[in-house]
Image (tube, rainbow, N blue to C red; front, side):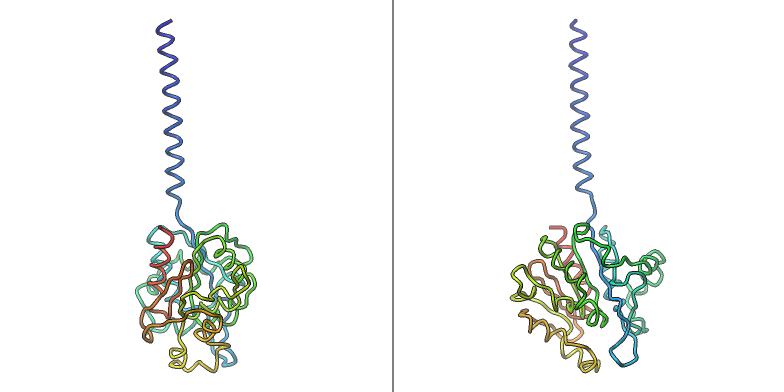
Length: 260
């Protein structure tokens, strides 16, 4: 009887140990889940009535993409129309190349992912931890008024998830609203492509609106750095960058927010 009693005690102890170990493993697996960020790219490829092409700016996609990916972040790409989004030809010029754009050109996996972006209407905010918008002039025409994009941004923000954009992409805040119906950027520190920078590339009269002016009109507390210099601001869940040089700084701020 004594041996049987000892045997039963041993079995119970073993089962309890295995249960605790399983619970710890489950907790560990949960903690190890990678953060997920949704990148939203433009589907618009026409620069107003000029006959010139536009789209997203390659560097503003590639630099944040690799910065976050190299830190273990899972990235999903989406666009209003799905499939291959257009890139601005000027961002593919020799003088616009950076280590990240060169890496992207040589990355067959990333190229395939880019060619098969999800249709924006098919994604849900619940599936991601943050949302990021690369710039380029394209968003001025489509994402600034895209109802699906507007709803996504509001869903992310209201769920306490970071919303980030760089260069011309803060155009996406043109019609986004806070819960009280006021502009989402009202009273918040923001930045974006400056009026001076737009004038420097002779597109002030081509674009449908100026990012800086729009943010100010919506009540945003706009600030900027020097033309073409890295500059980004963070205000709560909003992270915005001024120009292409600011894309890595935005990504750094986003990663810090995700890993707090």
